[in-house]
Image 1 (cartoon, rainbow, N blue to C red):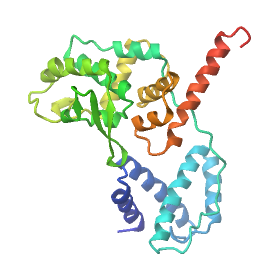
Image 2: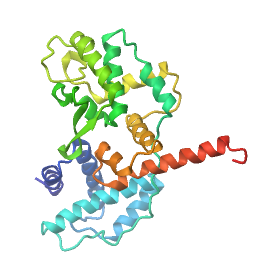
Image 3: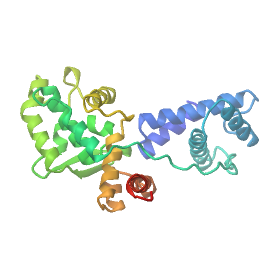
Length: 293
C-alpha cells in the first residue's frame, strides 16, 4: 500500500471523510506526485520550489486561484499527517502562501421563486407527491441533497416534527421540519410512497427505481424539470435550496449560530458566507428601489 492510500485510510478512519472528499484528495495528491516524477522527486521529499513552478503552469493552463488554494490545502493535510507519523521531519510546503481567496457568494433563490418551485410538482400523482415532499423537506431543513436522498423512513418523527439527519463525518443532528413540510410528508406517506413501493417496509424514505433510495443525480434531474415548470430561468445547483434556507432564515432575523447548527457546519466561518449573501441582497434592493440608489 502506497503513502497516498495509507493517508486516505487514516482520513476515513479518523475523520469519517466522505468518498467525494477522499476522491478529491487522491486526485490532488496523484497530480502532485506525477508532476514531481518529471524531476525524479518523490512525494515525501519534494523541492519546495517545485510547487510554485507547478502553480505557474496550472495558472497558464487556466486553473483558477480557488482551485490552487484547495490543492494546497489537500497537500498540507497530507504533509501534516506524514510529519505526525514520522515519515518526514517538516512540511516542505510550510512556507508556501497563496493570496487570500474571497469567498464566492452561493447561488440562491428569492422567496417567491422558492414558492413557485415548491408548487411545480403535480401532486395528483405519486411521483409528484414524492417530489413535493422532498422539495418541502429540503427547503424547510436546509439539507444537503445527499442527506435528503439518504433518509430512511425511521429518521422522520412526524409527531415531534423533526428529522434525524446524518451529515458529514457521520454526525447526526435533529432538524425541525415545520408544519408545511410535515403536512406534505404525511400526505406522501399515506398516498405516494405506497404507490411507489411494492414493499413499504424497505428503508428508503424517497425511493427511485426498484424501491431503492433515489440517487442524487435523479433528484437533481427532477429539480431541473420542476424549475422549467416554475419558469425559473436562473442557474440552479444541487445546493440551491440549502442556500435559500440559510439566506432566508438570516433575512428574517435568525441567529447565525442557530443557522450553523441547522446546516450541520462544524465551523461558524463556513456559515458566515450567508451573511454576505444577505448583505448583497440588501444592497441590491437599495440600488433597485431607493430614489438615489
